[in-house]
Amino acid sequence: MLKDITIGQFFPGNSIVHRLDPRFKIVITGVFITFLFCAENFYGILFGMLFVALTVLLSKIPIKMIFKGMKSIIPLIIFTSVLNIFFIEGEILFSWQFIKITKEGLETSLFMILRIICLISGTSLLTYTTSPITLTDAIEQLLSPLKKVKMPVHEFAMMMTIALRFIPTLIEETDKIMSAQKARGADLETGGLIKRAKALVPILIPLFVSAFRRAEELAVAMECRCYRGDEGRTRLKQLKSGGKDYIALALSLFFLDVVIFFNCIF
Amino acid sequence: MAIIKTEDLTYVYSAGTPFEKKAIDSLNIEIEEGELVGIIGHTGSGKSTFIQHLNGLLKPTSGKIYIDGTDIWQDKQTTLETRFKVGLVFQYPEYQIFEETVYKDIAFGPKNMGLSDEEIDKRVRETAKLVEISDEQLEKSPFELSGGQKRRVAIAGVMAMRPKVLILDEPCAGLDPKGRDRILDRIREYHKEYNSTVLLVSHSMEDVAKIATKILVMNNSSIVCYDEPPKVFGMADEIAKMGLDIPQITKVFNALKEKGYHIADDVYTVPYALKKLLSYLDEKGVKLDA
Image 1 (tube, each protein chain N blue to C red):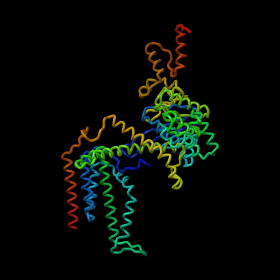
Image 2: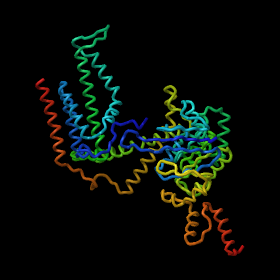
Image 3: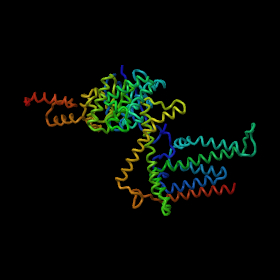
Image 4: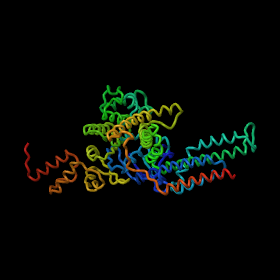
């Protein structure tokens, strides 16, 4: 059950997308989001889908994984499309009592669905192809100008790294505790809301206890290795950018231009 | 009739992703009632996955499991009942403790079985006595106990359900020799007292040699052998090749054999070693004082 969570998961590989400089990947994702929101018509969105499809192909991530990631946003898609279908005024196609469906409503909701799908699949490609550690490294470096105004950028990045690092550990731990309590006959699957909430107690308490224990152990381990924050800290793996990164950025900027151009001519 | 029987039991982790891994590969085994089986194998040999199948926590990718002659996946009810018939104690079981008092934590399993209050009380007290937890400790918070005590409480939590088959995954991990012997003693006691079948997972041959009536060796997702301890330890070389350690005393006797003193091949506990050694010396005409 818990193993089905794919959003934010890293998918190891050695494709060109995996090898891009993570700082560039973040910027490119920014550009991608920008052009998705700039797009005012279907041509623009279709062009965005082309961009996603290209990147997926290059990254060699199985299409199945992308679809699996989509599953969790189905409620969001249904919610937005319902809002759009029923509440947009325009040329009426169908009406029954107070419900009316307009051509504009249908168009907008389709447009929104495509945009959300593009947005989620495109941005999840970033986490699929970048390991969490390099991702936070890149965020730290991109935000480093903020250190000048006394923002604790390094500390934020370290907190994020630790949090990301412990997601799988905690999931595994939860799985283990759930199995242990199930082995003692705990019923987690049936019953009403209150019964189910109560059934969570035997899982949450051990989980919290172990999370605190781990946090303390990690803090001690970091101190033992003389961790003292950002100042004077060097890296084993320096992020490097090369020709392919600039080409990728140029390509994404080109897509942005095309989308804006589409907005003007159609 | 065998109490545990598996037919071509196979399990694949994360099927369809790059992390796909065959954890166990067509296991066929029959374990008779009343045995105390030591399961040994290297880390990643599939032993933990195997035992999680026996009480229906993991559903096999293919193959069948019979407990007491019933297919445990035949319907939902049977699967749930299996959980009570086959008690599973996980590694580091003290991390599953959650109640306010030791008493309540041990009572969690029996309560889930829907037993009456008197029966629960009787079982909790009996089991606490069996694992050497005092009445006074029963009313304490489990978080006040020492590591070894917590471990015994957690094991008692499963024993209190009186499973016909008790499975323990590395019950001695992380304990000192004294605590380890104590746990092993308690397990043997349970085995005797309730005449149940016990499966004990370990990668320490020493532990297994002390109490097991049969040994199951796993390597690379499959079963290498399932036999009585002397026969298994007789294959010392193969076992060493799998990266497993044989008991120290067996090593000593093997080393003696290399030096030209062939005493016995089936030595794996100290008392037996002493007996063999004495008779060997006698044979050679060496007189011992006292």
